[in-house]
Image 1: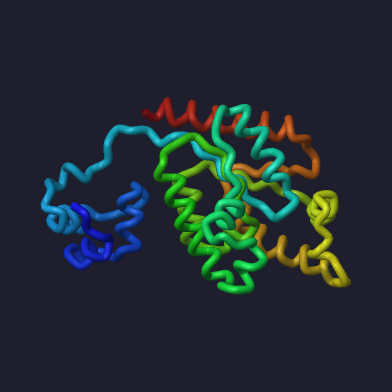
Image 2: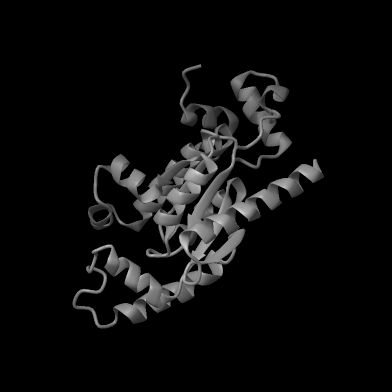
Length: 233
């Protein structure tokens, strides 16, 4: 119809943000509110009801930097025959800024909004994918709920020492440069986020398993979950 979300929002009384979720198949709407949207669009209510299309498998890897999200993510995606996507790289492309510049110029709230919008679009594509998320993705309740609802979440857990060594091995000394409290800060961040990370569907301790083993245990858990879902149907 060529209408914007704002125009439909004004017609239906449903917020543009929620309409965006609804359009992408992520909104949990009541029948009465869905009827309002149908009236605004002048279409039958039944035409907005869910189809039988099945949600394609999406695995979201969460955890602090240095947990192994990129390495394990690439190997897992290859094993599953799925796309591998790094959320932070996509954010940098969309903003045309490095993450450092993005945070300096626009702040954390802007980063979180971009992350949410990008994940919404990726999940709406309904393609098999493995997504390596940013370390702070769990600190935004809306984004974290979206991932838990619409993807299979895996916390790649590691000890502070392993996080530290892997970041250094990647050649990035900035987080530790001239900062004697860097390890203490790392431990504090991990401690604060651990309860959120632990809400993931699966936890894999990458301090004690190699890449191939991590791929194997994630794949086995996915297969078990899908077999269980098939039995319920």
